[in-house]
Image 1: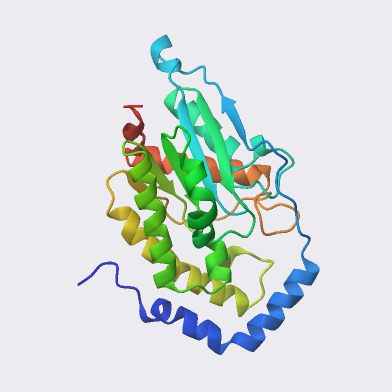
Image 2 (image 1 turned 45 degrees about the vertical axis):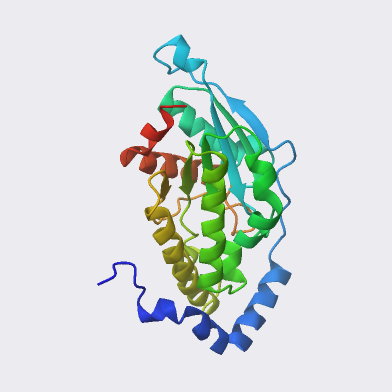
Length: 263
């Protein structure tokens, strides 16, 4: 039996959402009208985090180069400074874990799908030194009801092009948001969105699991108080820190950090 074969409810997630179309469209319009639209974090989307935990000066002098690429979370929506967003928080967690300085940068845009990353952001982002790619994508693919096949194709392209440009790099991919925990979303929109996001995530997990230098985070734990920004949709500074700590802790727990030792 194929361990990745999705249950029927996930295979039909797009069809179920289409059948609920009129209701979902009405709920979506109401949400867009009532939800504040937060801006991206101000530029620049790059920085450096030093660490005092290095065991020797030679290792401390070799920084890790982190690329965060994705959607609104890569763009730091929800915080007032990029250092408090996903890129900066991941750099802090990595520096603390590895004892090495981390040079980080972010690429992408609010609303980006996996296809947008492939066509508009991936090539220039990979042109710079890169030891670790953190990929955060899929939420907008779910919102747009993109097919699992199309999402799988684009994630495959991201993985292939990342390792073609940087064969010795490592790639971490975030799980998709746990939409069923988003109190902002009414039912049936919440259930439908979560169901379809899980169908997309399952396709991504197949691809990531097949690559020896890639890893995908497990589903996140319950969101803590203060996790969400004022729009109740994007992370706050607390939320980005929780997310980054969770992703790095998981990666270290499965030995993923050893892939960075050669850099």
